[in-house]
Length: 219
Image (cartoon, rainbow, N blue to C red):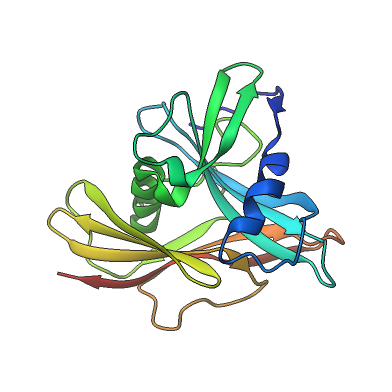
């Protein structure tokens, strides 16, 4: 179960994102973001080595707030071949230096997102250790995979990131992670699966939206 350490992270995740977000193709702002944490959830790495978090941040630098989802992974050493996905490094008050990645490029997060779609992983509370988050809902109407998956491609779109994986015994599958969240948005009409969760608006109101969908599968 996810363990949350009550300690410092220097620089903070919001500080790292303030620099990283404007360089992303799905960023909608025109300058330096003004960010606050708005919600999200965590997943467990079965090996207990990689931290996994799906974080929502609100950017209030423009005329209207924009809600971004950033899947993070936290590692104790660099992920080989993933320099392009590095958000930054930070010093954790308990665990020491952490390498923080855009998790859509991290095979550990991708495998656990796939497991969440299939019902083989359970979303965890973002802020409380050893606590499932039942507000995160999921569905999957495709054929179940019978073995490990392999991350084969990651492609950014205007408001999302498509992750393509090959599944042993289950063909190819595309998971689309929503980057710009819209409250109440239903997602892709013919999606074969979805993950829905909540976040807070600047006025404190609680809203929900689609965090990820399965757009297609092929054998």
